[in-house]
Image (cartoon, rainbow, N blue to C red):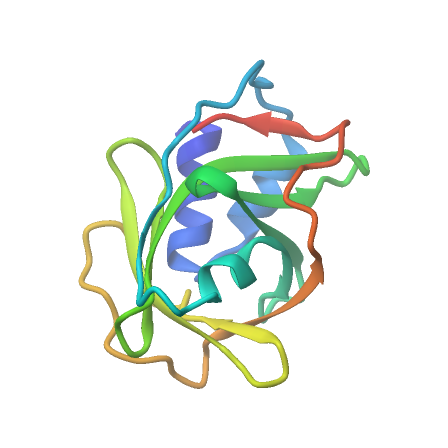
Amino acid sequence: MSNSKMIGKAIAGSLCFGILASFMATPGPASAAAPTIAAETTAPAASNIDTQLLGQWQGTVPSGQSFTFVFAPEGKLFLMAKGPDGAARAKEMRYKVNLGEKPMHLDVGLSSTETVETVFELTPEGQMRLQLQGTNPGQPRPNSLNEQATVFKKVSEATALPADTQVIGF
């Protein structure tokens, strides 16, 4: 199984972030230039939630492993974590939101052929609740967030990865 598929399964299933750990331990090929992917956002014109998403959101899975989602312009999404060697690694993905739905919809493209459909909300406290548990490519979108939804805290408005981050391309 390739590193891209391994990390994709970790993100999608959220059942075993040990896969993420193995990805972080094994350096993969760095991409020279990330492809540009147009963001697709369906939302009421008055909504600014799509702009609120931009930046770095840190979450922790039940196993205690911490990771960061970086929502960037043009529909780019990165899963960033540090390997045991301390080096930052990131998996490039794409995302699309539909803010007109309740709860809001988030589609995460793990590859050109695999997409995970899920739901999220932004809380009054400025956090994001994202349903990762029980989501996998090709499975129906959950209808709601449950008590196992992962809570993310926005830690930065920055949409660029640190310069020394090794990126595994989309």
